[in-house]
Length: 371
Ligand SMILES: Cc1ncc(COP(=O)(O)O)c(C=O)c1O
Image (cartoon, rainbow, N blue to C red):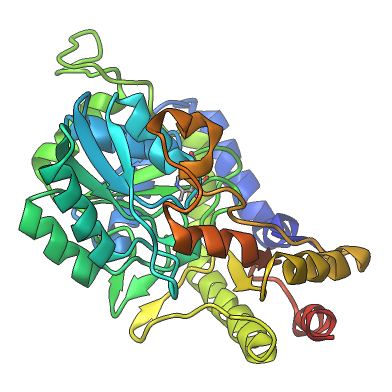
């Protein structure tokens, strides 16, 4: 059994994918070819944002967002410690300081109440300048943007939505990757909308930010790439990846529906033995991961071992919260600073999740876990 089955999907769209790659090879516009702008139009349309700026990865999308907001040394950026390192890494890369804020114990996303406390703490005690908030839509579930927006308005801090895992999720009818002043996503192959290599996208409704992001994407270009008006990066998405993503986008809604079915079956069969994902009313997850909580680390280890003995992969996202990572030793955090995410990181594990998982496979997994 596969943790994420990309082969079944490829079989389904193989001839269209090959045709669209061949098309790029024929026209030869490998960089910023017509597929890139077509994909940007379709993605902006999909999430309901005014502008989409495609880019080289979900990490670069976040980096470019911080650069566009002119975040730098002396600035504090508030984020969750329960995420992939990329979310905080980019804050450090621009010379700013990540300030971690513990998560909500039910959704695993940043707690708006604790965020407010943390911002007040920085304002009153530390000599840093609060500059932005990066909530993460963990495992595909959008963060609590209703409450987060109140905090963002109270302190006049822009939100950068890290939607690397949530493309395809929503709150009511509003799609993930449209909640931030700038929102970002990733097309890493294992993501809900994954390419066949690295890729990402940035969304905004602000024309000024859009123009800045397009400049940053190509070395800070002005009216041409040899007229450089700011520091930028090489952050473009390849035409071949855009061509592939266009094909994948055409089956994406069906895939998201299949993921919902897989998650629903898992939850109904596992809810008596584990804490299953809590999806608040009106929210829908893109189910980048299906993650459950064991009673404690021994229960988790035994459960994962049972699966492994039967050839079923599982994984831990994330075993070490970011404040306890060696890379962030210099920030001086220690065990006990963020008790909610520390507790969850000892108990959480993720099961195979993809649109092509069969009912019988899910039955096999849940039977093993329940016994
Ligand atoms: C929450 C989160 N943020 C950022 C990233 C970075 O995306 P990428 O791997 O495309 O650089 C990822 C995925 O890997 C992620 O899960």
